Structure formats: structure tokens, C-alpha cells
Image 1: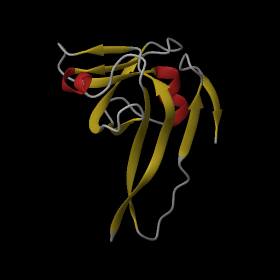
Image 2: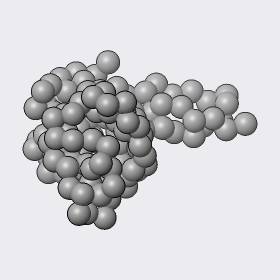
Image 3: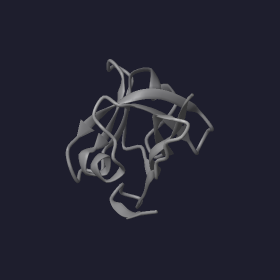
Length: 116
């Protein structure tokens, strides 16, 4: 049997941009993607700590060390500039397999702080 488990998490990132007139996706600073082991075009679940909204989208690489976290397209209705969000990526494994998730913390400017 296959199960879905947490692979990666960026905890409490701050939304820096929201672009409704865009085809969709979530732009994440490339350095944060690398630290969290999230790939470009990977499906993610986003949880907004400000309003409780949860939504799925995919990731686009943003400029490294820019601190960008940009919600685009319809997701711009669910998260606004200044909101804190947590970004989750999952892996599908056999029930007998295990994985240690990569969970990162960021500061108020979306700079990498540490892995937990």
C-alpha cells in the first residue's frame, strides 16, 4: 500500500507579492526551495496562518536570496501580502518505506534561519 507523507515544509514564510492576473502558481526564493528540498513545478499545499485558507498549487523558482514568496492567479484570493503561510510538499511511499522530512524556518524577510 502507498501512503503520502510529509517531505518538505517551509514554516511561516511571509507573502511578499500577490498577483491575481497571472496563470497561477507559487513563486518561492530558489535558496529556500533548495534548503527545503522542493523542486520547481512540484505540487504543494499552502496553509495561511492569517485566515485558515488551505490550497494546492505548484512551485515556480524565484530569484535566489530574494526572499520572494508570491501567490499568483486564483490563489491570490486566498493569501495577501504580509500573511504568514506554511508550505508543505509530500512524497508517496510504500508503507514499509520511511522518510525524514526537511523542515525549515525562515525569518520575517524569508531568509533561511535553520532546519529542524
